[in-house]
Length: 172
Image 1 (tube, one colour):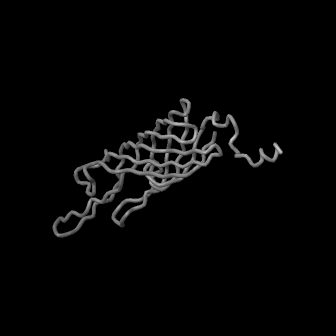
Image 2: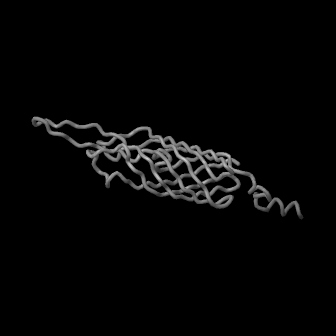
Image 3: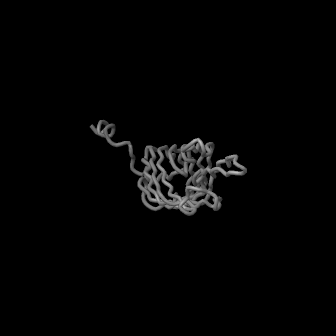
């Protein structure tokens, strides 16, 4: 009877929550994932701190915008428990792509190239990592387009919102 009960019991074993996170691989949307991409995260300092790298693809919203590979790097500070945790994140990622428009010189239109704006960002977020490994994370914050200049259109100043959601696996 005890054997049958143990087979029906949850797979979470006593003491398993003491098994620390080592790393997470996830896929998602948002700045920390390189817009549409994947992210690898390594934990240290008793899982309070982590470092991550995201690599993805930033699609163009129109034919006049740049698209292509995008990179994100950052660190997180965690607070909370073994499965449910909040975090604060600081990162550098692609903020947006912009199109400079057209300049008219002697009646001819000259198209300026679209370019990407990178800069630092701050986010607050939540991460759930089951003891079996399933992981979901979501976050929101702001980016500062450090590489923007006064000719870049479409910015509310140099600040832009950032959001992210991702799903993956955490190894303990």
